[in-house]
Amino acid sequence: METYVLFFLASIAAGVINALAGGGGLITFPLLMLAVAPVTADATSAAALFFAYPTAVWRTRDQLAGVVRRGWFWLLLVLSLLGGLLGALLLKWTGNRSFVVLVPWLVLLATLVILLRPILVRRRGGHSIQLSFSPWWWPVAIAGIFLVALYGGYFGAGIGIVMIGALSFISRGDIRHVVALKNLLCGCMRGVAVIVLVLAGDVEWKYCVPMAVGGLMGGYIGGMVSHRANRIVVRSIAIGIGFAIAAYYFWKLYGPTILRVGGD
Image 1 (cartoon, rainbow, N blue to C red):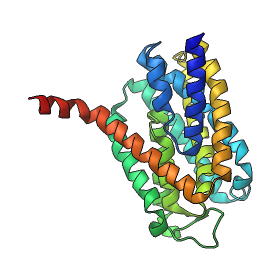
Image 2 (cartoon, one colour):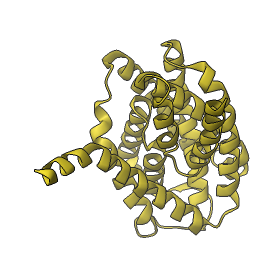
Image 3 (tube, one colour):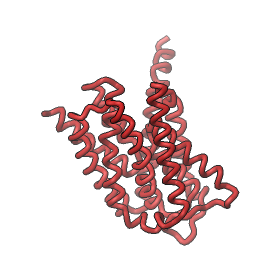
């Protein structure tokens, strides 16, 4: 019983983090590793935390009202679904996560884009999301979002920060609207990836169910925070989480080597 309670509370915290910026899996995956095999832990964590996205989207639905009526939104949505599906299928077919070496660099780059967003992106009229590039940049934008979605379906570590970085680079508007759009697109791409994981039989449901309930609650809380908080606060939270995720994966990948060299 203590294990289920711990996983439930951890998934609430992870759901909040995912709704705000991403990286909640850094909480749930290590905990699940204590109880199940790595592949099962990863699949169970992904399935449980998926449910944070619908509640976060529902909580910030008013920030998406003007976006869903735009043609470019549906293009981004299709790209996210297609990339997420292909990424999950690639993982299933190859059986490895070779993208892990790219994670800290991708997250660090995306975090720097968010940090430099006021300089890189012009804000006009203030609040709703609008595209900020000329038609000549459409192929680059389409390719960028598709690659982000492909990565999200294949591996997904830090996908929230990476998606915020990509959306921040191609759009202008309030960071809270960018986070709301991120939750919708990431929810769709991770949703199709989770379907693949479920069909593959990799999810441990006795842990996934209570964690999914916690993820639902955490997503709602995170959506409420991102909706009500000052945009500077939301942006600062996203940047802080981004640097923390990058530091975690840098240490995970290169820390043992540094310690070994230092010991020699």
